[in-house]
Picture 1 (cartoon, helix red, strand yellow):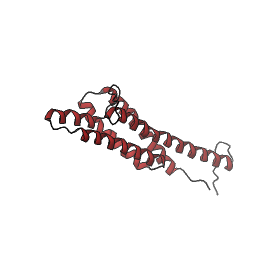
Picture 2 (cartoon, one colour):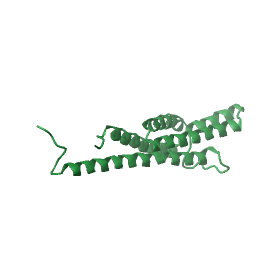
Picture 3 (cartoon, one colour):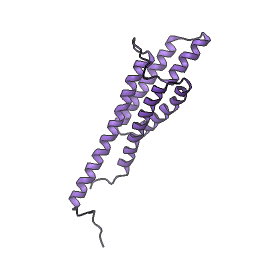
Picture 4 (cartoon, helix red, strand yellow):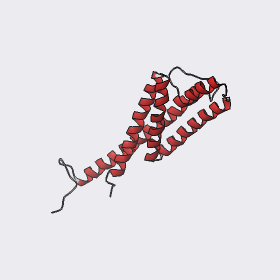
Amino acid sequence: MQTLNVGAGRTDEEYQAAEEQRRADLLSDSRSAANYFFLAAGLAVLSTGVLPIRVLILVNIGAIDLLNRYAYYTGQINPLLVYGAGAAWVVALVLLGLAARKGHRWAFLAGLILYGADLVPLAMIFSFWSFGIHGFLLLKWFQGQKALKELKEAPASR
């Protein structure tokens, strides 16, 4: 006996249309989550001092802040080192965002690892606002990689 892809009174065409819509929604969700890499890069530009303006109220990068604090106390700080680290952070986020927008799940996973590791220095310097923003971004990137995983596992259209 042949089983048709029908359920709850749907025809095969309706089922195929629903599956295509589901795949389109998953792709849209993953691209929306990938846009948060660009938001994170913009916030990093504001907080690391890459631009002449620096805003430290809402967002910090824990690794950059630790570099600033501990290198400053030893008297060995080189400002170009801090600016270079900030610029590298921003470039990494932009590149991860571009890869995530193309549908690469590894980019989301790399973002999760990068920002998850940055939570440790943020906890050490008691930057709770930044800790919350990092947590929000981690949630969005987790949702993005989950959408790509479901998209890969979803049956392809015929």
